[in-house]
Length: 142
Image (cartoon, rainbow, N blue to C red; front, side, top):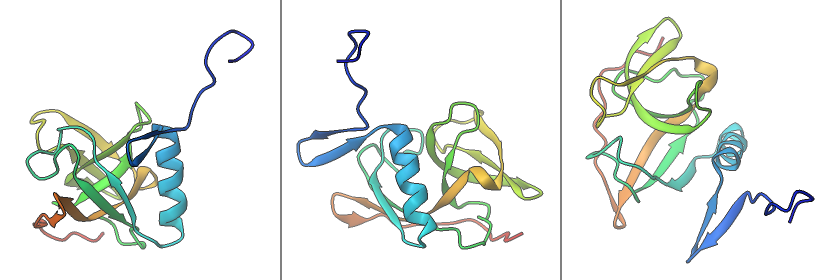
């Protein structure tokens, strides 16, 4: 307990056989791993990318390696307004920034996301221990 009588904040809890971390800890850990040029795997939560990525799927995010994500690719990024980790699809570009939106939230784009907020690109999705086919759009590597 803190001096104010509140429970100590936790960065992680164990649920069953999984380590569940806070949003902030997940972002920090993902940045550290991707900065070492190593892919990062975690279990997706939420429905904004269904049917492509479903709640509970295991996704692998790869480092960008100085190659900007193209239209149609799915990226992990820190949303500039909420500071939450989000995994959504690139739908367009504006200079070096990307327009990003979830597949299952038509008409509700995340907005224009700067390169500094994009952590990596999704390179693998697994559901029930099987790979989900990745179908990307056109390439625009600028």
